[in-house]
Length: 113
Image 1: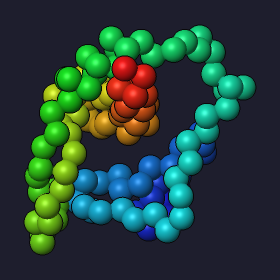
Image 2: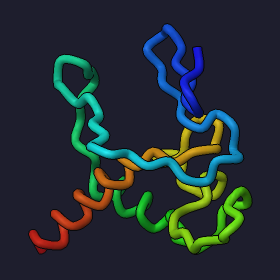
Image 3: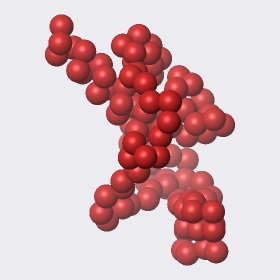
Image 4: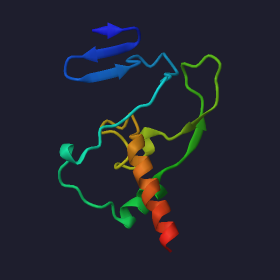
């Protein structure tokens, strides 16, 4: 069913702002991504080459959201232009956790050198 601007389906999925006409979503608290080893398989280190290539493939941009009447400035990435490792399968979204992982790897490597 729906709750305000959220859609909850009974497959354990919560979709916020299912129409693209609501420019901002605010969380009062923390988003946490499940990350337990118990949930994962095929665990392998991200190579430095993969991390550097993904970072080099990112093009940070500034923009306004079309649905935002105030046209507040935003910073981010264009999903359609993002490296495959960062963009969603349909190239309509960015996986922020992937960007954080890539940045952590690159920063860690820069401190080692």
